[in-house]
Image (cartoon, helix red, strand yellow):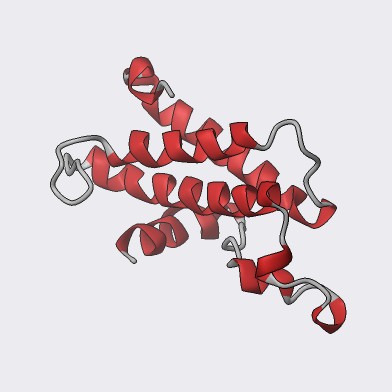
Length: 129
C-alpha cells in the first residue's frame, strides 16, 4: 500500500496517469460481462501485472533515494526487483498481440521503465534483467 500511494502522490498525479486496473476492473470495460478474468489471454494478464509492478517500482524510487532498500528486509533494491519482474512479464508477451484496450497500460509500463532508467543513471548495472 505504501508503494502504491507513493506512486500516486509523486508520479501518477504529476503525469495524469490513471492507476492500472485489476483483471476484474479491466473486464468491466467490456459490455455485458462478455469477458471475465478467467477468459483473459495470458499476454493480457502479463501486461496488467507488468503495469502494476512498474507502478510499484516507481513508487519505490523515493524510498530508494532516502536510503531504504529491500522488500521485507532482504537487502536488495526494491526498484530493481520490481522493475525486473515487470520487464520479464513484458518480455514474455512480445510475440502475442495485446488487446487494443491495453495499449495504454503497455505504453505506461514502458514510460515508467524509462523514468526508472533516468533515475538509475547513477547505477546503470543495477537495473539489468
